[in-house]
Image 1: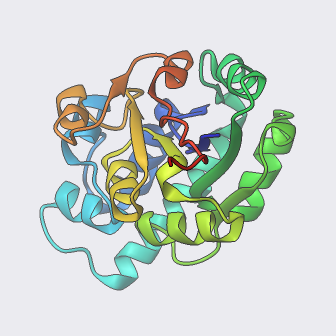
Image 2: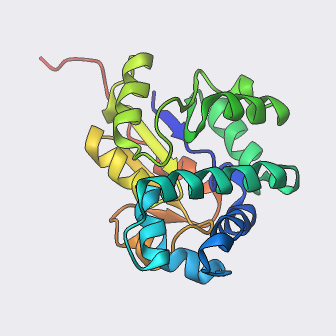
Image 3: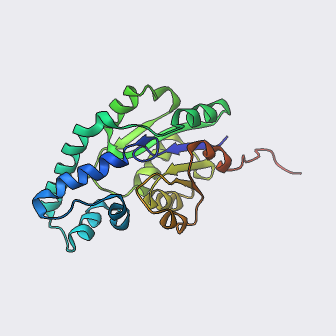
Length: 220
């Protein structure tokens, strides 16, 4: 059977408004902003430090990057209470589970905080594994996806990664998995389409993009 790996921020968790506001709070000491949603999409990339390089129009120093990252996360945590699950997130999870599809969660959000959020929304029972970031903030996803699938013993050819960012498509391609991108805020739709993977406007459409079931039988 196929296996679905879900992204969290911007995919199952509708936090785009809070993300933009938190970025703006972090930028205050640097004389930049505030930016709006369109400007965020114009500049957003990973690693996240390059996002700030683009916003400031220069390379951000290492101490500045640490400061910006800290300011962002401090502001974001204060705003978490106003963020909600994405529309149809629970419907999509239930639909896949009802079809016998296994699911896991992989996010670049700090692991312990991710687990707390998953528990807050009572979603843990849908996932065979929940993995958040245990290393450097702002990292790319490909290596983490490879480790996630390796720990599960899942063949990447059976995997569909559901995310909202170009980094998700790049991570899936790097390990040989399929990918679908949810147009939820972090990128302009045409940017997502340029990645060459399906782009959806509703999470319930994930089911239409599952990898085909591989036959285990042999031909004589």
